[in-house]
Length: 159
Image (cartoon, rainbow, N blue to C red; front, side, top):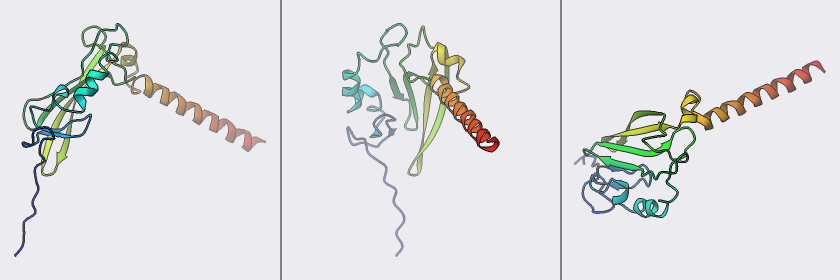
């Protein structure tokens, strides 16, 4: 007798019912009710402990990273963090550019849609072609290494 392959559906780490997806921060399987950051551990305690650090780096207004689910397969994540310099940015005053990306991740035979909000601060918005401030620094560092290598090779070849 041949047995069919069984693909168990993961259960919620908080309550044990059918999982709706995985938290992008702690990677635990969670149901729709426990998917928000303040509804499951360890993200709830981490958010409470670091609440003072979660402030817009320009004006100092408090920001609150959010995530929620509208269905078993649709999840929304907004970290309120600049995608270019990885610092917290407020939504009202200092988000110069905002874009929504959709990432589809497989979970056994199911798949989940994660709608990720990418924000850019005023400084990184001008440099978003390079990946923001950090990406521009990496591009500049790479260019310096290439130029230095070419100068060294030219000196060895000529001398």
